[in-house]
Length: 376
Ligand code: NAD
Ligand code: ZN
Ligand code: ZN
Image (cartoon, rainbow, N blue to C red; front, side):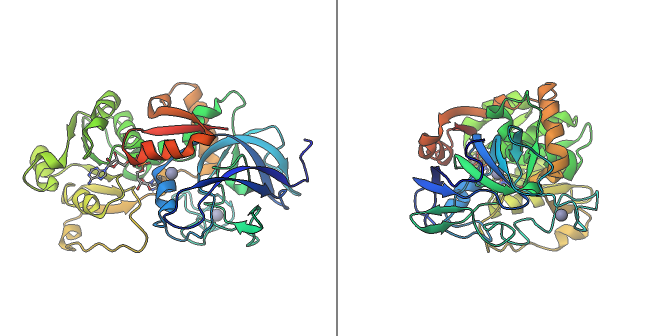
């Protein structure tokens, strides 16, 4: 392409400091170095994690930074040695990389990778430099992918080629929200047919958990949110009961234990709060229950629990991106979407031009959207 090997000037949303609004700036995007890929973004979803980052609550992050991690685009140019994609390919950017070489990547039981952000910050590329500059200043990447930019540069193991027929304005959700929630049910909890499930938080992630529980054959899916406007969609996707903790004069875990006799078989926390995490843990079956933490509490927070909760046998676990090894699995999920094995469109409540990013973030903060997709 004509831009190959050149610095590209384009628009990107920069978070200059924690807690400050994002500002759309003209940035310079350097060409990809060896092993890297430069991508022209086509669509990106807005996930709560981007807002969490903007507020300065996400672990291992550095400012100034370009957020965004639910993106799909087209390869513009590739650095030396890149073999997995070529210019013109449709791709999904992977916020959980798969280097293919570390002990985690070689273990089929996990999607963790030593290149993962929780292990070593992905706010710089593997050579410890960034490809973004603005007003003479280096701007950090987020999860390596920084999808709130017209162009971005990622290492080749953080990008996957997908079917050329895929609509990027829909499958961008396969970069985070949908596989996280759906995989939490299918891969992390391994929900069994006929079981009971409880899901705390009904955003894009929690509703995808509901879809996963339904697909796995759960007979009871209790959806919990403090915003009752989320209930209609939860019911449409398979929730059998929708409850608001504020409607009860006793703790929500007691309500759930009563509803399920001893506690639900599987509980999921997808609100990113400590109190809901404790409630999810306490409201699963004391012996055979599995509680999966999906939401991300603010960096550095601590939770005290009674260890006797674990003695009886219940399992408490977490999941990153629903357990999918992303480079292997995301292209397959794209194919499954094209074969109509699950729906993504139902999660997209708003589509806006990239310039209206702030409006999209405000819809999320106000609880008025599930997923807003920004188009470049
Ligand atoms: P969202 O903001 O769209 O949804 C969160 C929902 O939780 C909202 O509907 C809100 O009303 C509800 N909520 C808030 N407080 C509650 C309470 N006390 N009880 C019940 N419900 C409550 O967010 P999202 O994009 O769906 O993301 C959900 C969480 O998942 C976030 O913490 C996000 O950072 C995290 N996340 C984790 C992963 C992962 O890999 N584990 C991936 C993506 C997102
Ligand atoms: Zn996300
Ligand atoms: Zn690895």
